Amino acid sequence: ASASNSTLILIDGHRFPLSGINHTLADPNILAPLALERVEVLADGASSVYGSDAVAGVINFITRRRFNGVQVRAQTSQADGYQTYGAGIVAGKTWDNGSVLGAFGYSDRDGLLSYKRDITRRDRRAIGGSNLASFFCSPATIQVGSGNIIPSPYNGAGVANAAANSLCDYSGVADLIPSEKRYNGMFKVTQEVGDNLTLSGDVVYSDRKNLSRDSRGTIQATIFGAGNATAVTNGQVNPFFQAPAGSTATSESIRFDANELFGPGAQTESGEETGYVHGSAEYKLNENWRATLGGTYGFNNSFTYQTGTINSSAALLALNGTTNGGGNLTTPSINGTNIIVTQRLDASNALDVFNTGSANRTSAATRARILDNAVSNKARQTLKDVTFKIDGDLFEGPAGAIKSAFGAEYVAYTLAQDVVRPNNTGPASTGSSALHLDYDRNVKSAY
Image (cartoon, rainbow, N blue to C red; front, side, top):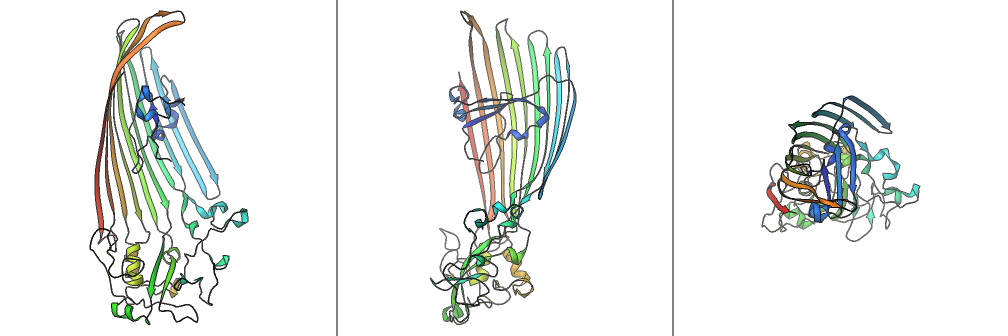
């Protein structure tokens, strides 16, 4: 889960494609579990042998080499609000001068909502902690100037740091663990050709899909009432403005959580497709020396697609007629540009944060604009790796053979990213930015 790539992850002693969008890391879960024979861990730094990505050590996942027969495995587990399923099969055949093996794995995991676990609630006083709930509520809380934050239903002047039962916690609507489905498979073959040459190859493919239920989001903004002359002139009066009881305020800061208004539906879809082909040829030069040539080509396609969370700029436009929280008509919507977006408010385009359920007066069109907030991230990574090695015994020493090895390696990585996201000018369908980035890294080494 870290951004570190200082531990080198190998499969059968060779590199395989990196994965991810924000962090490019090797994911050994692409292997079907029944294909795995053992794991070797080199806990010390090994950068002098393996390169700069092995500063913290090396983990080598070694798959079955010679397997006869068929093995099938299935399992399921269940907990409160959570269930998993898994199945796999491996089949293999060996003969005097070769072998073949195939393995397939499937796993399915439910998503786990936060409210299913008491320990994840923000009010942790029952387990000896603090109340970390917030003033982002529905109906919204109100603050006039630098005064006290007044909780709904606004039936008094409020008190500093409002009573604990006035704080709100909507964290339970989001997943602690996303749901996941994964398919993965491996096929490998080894064949001796004559007395000196051994050929081997393997193919690995994995496809993973995740779905995470998200919070709709929160918003904080200054809104204006009909008594505010400047707001009337500029068309910034929110027709649903509600001042605290007994107050003559014509502007106030609101803190609003959108989960109750919009209900469930925010989510993040993510996943990755990974595959590689590896081949090697080993030739015995004599009884003591051998030459090995290997090559790997692989790819990874990763994506995330987020929908259903509130579009902050569209919500601000519906609260105070601008795309900034303070309601400033001259603040650009995009940093470094002169783009300024405003709208004159009326009942058809304003957001009502003071009423819930059927009493809420936000129009269907306004709700649709506020939820117009798709964010897409895609990445494609490739790997090309060619290795050549000659190793063998130099001579016999008092404690055994003195060995030597020399060789070379060429590794080429590529990463292409595409990001599409709202540009802070309102609904994403009418105002988004697109970004394409290309990276590549080539390493030539010899030892």
